[in-house]
Length: 288
Image (cartoon, rainbow, N blue to C red; front, side, top):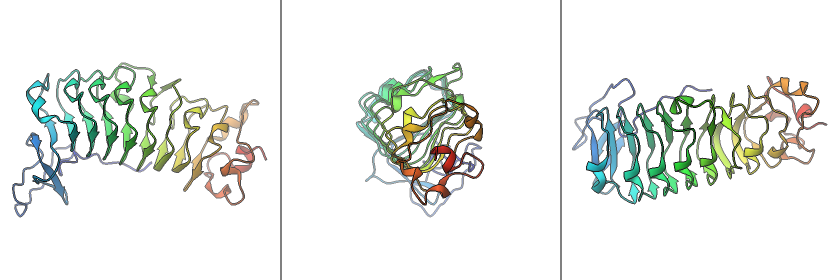
């Protein structure tokens, strides 16, 4: 998997806290400054004020225990929502928000649930969740239908959980980049509605025994299912892959392994190239 650098998205401050000022941009403020209700954008990694944009919130390392002071800045349509280094237990003040046009990034908090986002239908940027105290689900995202950039959720977002119910993605239809849940042990969940992931669909080492979650999938850039003791991949019948699909050869040791039907899109002539050379081949996957 390619190494991913997570930015605050409201500027050039990485997790290390490094900033790069650009005095030529009017009203420039480095992202180490908390920006609440500011109309912010970024240009070549630099943050500046643009009154024509939606309000964004960036709360960095303030040890906040509540967002009540900022309720007037939280609206139905938001720009970026970035919260890290705080002592928040919840984000209930976002209950009326329906669209986050930028990215939703939350890490290094004490947040226990995402219920405040349960009215959100679209996230225009990325969704990054890690180093939180979430209860063993993402139910607060139940109404999200589209995500405009990458989804990165790590097991550190659920510090107290051995398994995580990912039913919060049950309405999600498209991710316009990668979707990475690698290492999260996914508890048996409702079927996802995801049809399209333009980047890497990364579900390695998630404890999956079948691909039923992906039965609506029509397209993915790549699919990584390595590290799972799969016994049934037949629900990938409609899936097309631009790059590779990787499934461990060890699955063939299961005499009851159920592969793809010969009519599946991945089983058609010319599709063998999409099976990763380190995993099962088209012939093995399609029971040809």
